Amino acid sequence: MQSINVQIDISSPTGRRLLQEVIKHPKIARIEQIDPRILNPATSKSHNEIWKEMEEKLNKFYNSDLKLDY
Image (cartoon, rainbow, N blue to C red; front, side, top):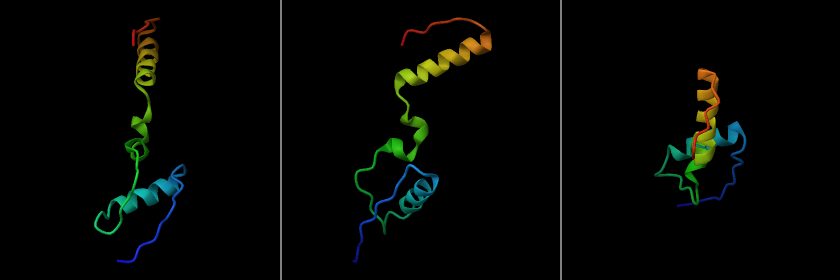
């Protein structure tokens, strides 16, 4: 099998789209050292960031000043 090494800048939408296309072909392409948060940026937030957002949304919706312990 002939192979090449490729570097893809996944900070851009085009780079992420290329990465997703490569992932669809596991028999042909192999990806090394990939962080799961790269594939799904929505999960790249920390635990505290998620709770902070929930706190802000609840306070806005209920017009309150609730402070969550997280």
